[in-house]
Image 1 (cartoon, rainbow, N blue to C red):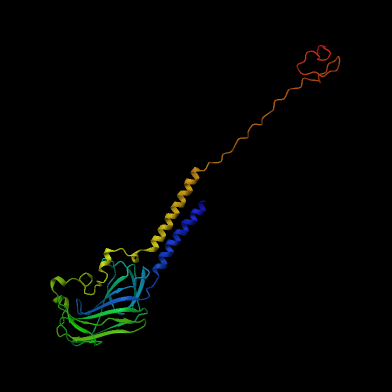
Image 2 (tube, helix red, strand yellow):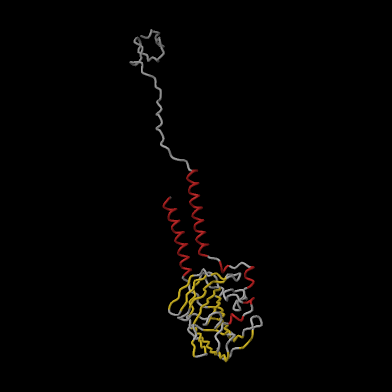
Length: 312
């Protein structure tokens, strides 16, 4: 019985760890939406790239996502975005050969990094390149024009030039597009800056917070703003649930076995019962016959019942 309980316990633990490790290794097959913001000369004399991605609702979580980044990129933040729009930087990630791999338990994630631009006199030039093994169903890209920039040229040329009334920046926004797996996506630009300056220095005080604050960031995805008020099965860690159920069943089995043992009668060694001895009349000696007539006598006869002679 002890071996059976130990076997069940081992299977439950193995199921828990195997499910966790298996789910942690499931790669995302595509990205539903990718919001791309490119801010040159924003708070450092280089290019700040911000990517906010959303996985499809049917993606098993936790999931791993591999996206391309510049080989000379300096990571600023890698985070997951919770259902209530909070960014938590507790996710695991690795960088190798121009790729960033993230493991996230939430369907939304955020990546921020700095990349250097090229300079030729007063001209700054930068090119963003995306080449991934997984498709992007919809990408929304925008380039922020530095406050001290002039003669800015952006490619592709189909960008809309708009001025944000909140921060006063000029943005080059591109129409939504889809990127197939293995398809090249590129945005490049150049501009002149006679006097080096950072855009953050010209921001109003109310908007001078870091770009990592998702609630103040123009790249925040507001399509899921109502998700904080509703329960979502996507965020359930099914590996922990299955493991918990297995351990709970194990506890029930062990408790039942202990209770059953207490109620069963214990077998004790029984003493051999004494053998019953049947009482038999002890023989009174020789066969009793009348010595006079030979008549058979009973044990209590004092006189022969036939001839009346006294029994000796």
